[in-house]
Length: 181
Length: 176
Image (cartoon, rainbow over the protein chains, first blue to last red):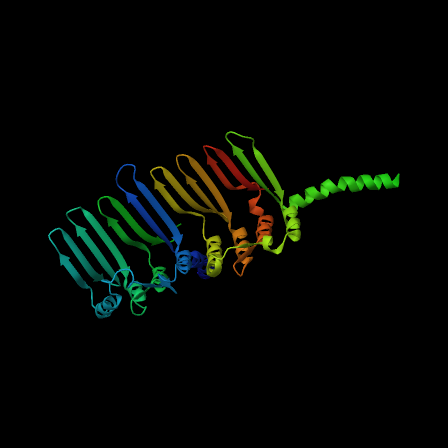
């Protein structure tokens, strides 16, 4: 008995090493369906993405915060932030549903995640986005028209699995995070 | 007789000393093979380049790279982070006629670009890149810093740093 306890105590620290050493990697895959198509694969440690973000031009990203107002006047970050603050404490439910003849958009909260699904029946396109609530919180932690990308990426470090899946019939995009390079 | 022996030892030791210096500091070889002309091979012993630098005017010992400016510190951290991460294919693009592969292999970043008429292969030793970035000061890269990085990076020996192959010529830059 004592030997077993001793063995477990000895093994525990070594068992913990891989967990501590695991670095989250972000993977992006873009595949065109047609013959002779393009294929793109990007695999990067999130820590590298975080540092690279600091090198983005200041007028786009300033100290890890992206300003949206100069990109699209109709896209109001402050409105979105206000809306998010109202919705973030809502229980598991359908937050937004837009049903049109050829397209359905659904945004719902499921546990600690926000799921966005778009079903384009006309072109057969499907979009699936999964974002943890903490990432959206981090994204909206900027001020005014700013989205805080640096904090959002920092939060992504604790996420594993698919974040974005898009299949619009012509192109497939998959973005996911794991500990494999 | 003693004088002759001494002279012989001194004369023999000069090439040995030179060989030792080349071996310890390294040799950069530029090899150009045009499809329709003579092959040009230029070996540059790094200790000679270092020595030449000490006689060069100040402006020739530094290369102005103002674009790096504020990014040098970020680039340094990026290099450090890449050195820490596992070997992996970082980027792979297959675009009909072109293929791009950026891979982390050991302490190097290997970049390969191939198209119908050209193949380019570049290897960036991360230790040397870190040293070069450290030598960056006030918008300038010290040429001596670049030479130091090439000399001290043991992983470079026998490696093609740059290899470009096109229809018209083949260019190789390697370190020994």
